Image (cartoon, rainbow, N blue to C red; front, side, top):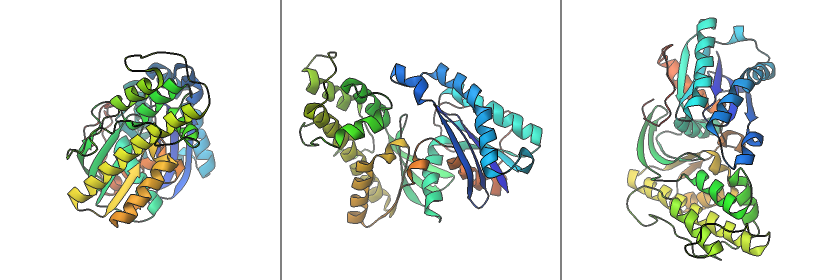
Length: 339
């Protein structure tokens, strides 16, 4: 059974083809980094137009890599929530057209929950129930993942997501876009203890995150209290130390809240997904915590951390239960759970 999946939730146009045994035959991603770099962040209208231009070529390349034609596709999957509504609509419209034309089932997948399923795919075995941590540009959330399709939200960010904070701090430091890789590179030569930056909610019992104040603290450390704008710092130890201190503050909070969620739920498995989980320092810190807590840690390879269509294979679980999506399926920009 061959599935064709479409992902257009933000700024990556992706088409994947996989089987009901979760074998990935193709996972093509057309990046839009070049389009958004000049703006220092993703522009929704630009992203939607780029999806329109790139979706068909991306689909053709996925079919070519899988050595299949559309006649071989038995079901169509689309990420319909959450995300930028204009970008989502491109993928949803294309998926509905394909399913109707090919006369095959239409399935929908939740983008956030699919990030956790990417860890299950990489593991090659069942990892549920587990605590799920999603850290990306738009989301920082903890879940009690009872099954691949049954998630309870434990807590999330009340302002900036971790990835958004990386982008904003990268802009403050003049490191460019996307911010995550840029900050990580700069932090490699910095001292993570050079600046005492805040770690919001670190010792609070609530499983929530806040990174807006951390971003402001970096700004004040650079220019002084109350100053919000100034020249970009020159390359050197000072900039590297700020990047390293910021990165460490984010990591400390993510690790502490993950440990707190594991202890609260009494679960012994932690699955992590999202673009920020590609950060090597974060992965190392999570591995060390998992060893201390004697829990299993599941993090997918880098190719499945960032937005991609292969993680939509969570819809195979829906296909097995005949939980098909209607042809009036809509794009849902906010996370609503139980999707």
